[in-house]
Image (cartoon, one colour):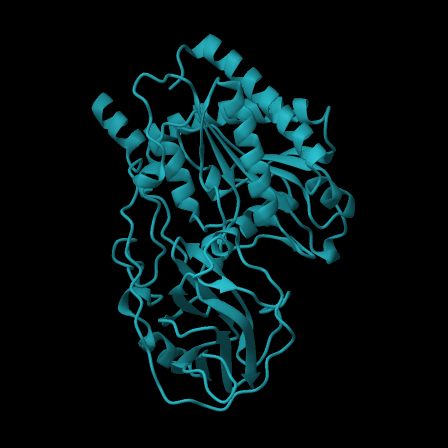
Amino acid sequence: MENRAKHLIFLGCGLLCAAALALGVASAPSAAEGPPEGQPAPAASASAASAPNFPIASGARLAGDDKQTRFILDLDRKIEFRAFPLADPYRVVVDIPQVNFQLAAGTGSAARGLVKAFRYGLVMPGGSRIVFDMTGPVKIANSYVLDAANGQPPRLVLDFEQVDRTSFVQSLAPESRPELKPSISEATTATIPAVTTAALPPVAATDSRPLIVIDPGHGGIDNGTQSGDQTEKNLVLGFGLALRDRIEKSGKYRVVMTRSDDTFIPLNDRVKIARSQSAALFVSIHADALPRREGDAQGATIYTVSDKASDAEAERLAEAENKADAIAGVNLTDEPTEVADILIDLAQRETKTFSNRFARLLMDEMKSTVRMHKHPLKSAGFRVLKAPDVPSVLVEIGYVSNKGDLEHLVSENWRNKAVGSMVQAIDTFFSKRLATAGPAK
């Protein structure tokens, strides 16, 4: 039984092997196109900006109606691509090599014809993705890249046509059809390559310092919430890097980042990073926003995992954050059924106790330096907090939808104070835990 318990508790710690992104070349005759909408504004990711040899996308637009809709992407050179539909919800995904997107602000947010909206961005190093949210079932009637001609740049063109549900399902790859639930290894045409062990720093066998995983939310194609030109993914990455630097400066702990640049990391892979490294603490950083109809809110909030949300706002936020993989174009499969095992449940109970203890310590430290939400401690079913053996919290450092909070989030002085209070909470947490529980993991 003891061996079985150990096997179950550590089952799933291994990381999935990275799947190679297969890109196919498509070609077809040219077609008439309309003029670009608006002028491009630089909006490239840090990764893309550092590599000027990446193809540049300078304009994107939609044309057509609710029967036939065309998408056009202006480029500075021809590229390879692969396009495929997905069901429930109806989406079309286009995988392309890494592209420097220099599109006008708000591109993709307006509906047109069969397309409700589209988003774009880095989905893995070397690969970008465009994801279209469709109004209903569609087929990709045509897809091709045009050469530069008649003063027009090279263009990627996709034609969508309305079809019925039956025709749509039959057009899907077998592993993507809604009546099937493939494993991650089987769904090679519809998954995002997992994080590899090569991306993680080596752990010294003699280094007994507690390891802390910092998880800046969102990234790549997933911008998170946005206010003006400020995106959640950039705000929380800057905060996470500052927190990492402060923790490492103390010399007391080892630190691993789930992402240190503008790259998309699936939710389950964020958890796997913590478990594979035998992390002693997992801290996910986010910055929430409320829809206008829900009024205004302000201040930092600290979340722990729970099957039952502490309130409606916590439930809404968890549902939104748990859709991150769908935002990138694909819902990845859930964790194995091991989490239902009673032995895992016992491990989770102890982990939840430590998670709640750290959340309270963090609240006590932060409330003396930064503004807190009126209900600063909450819980909900966040997938990213469900490691059964790693104490985990999700910290919403503020609301980008609140003017005062947004001013703080972009302030280096505020960030330094918030980071300092977090480090103090970490010190207190580990001083108490190590004194009562013996050596760190």
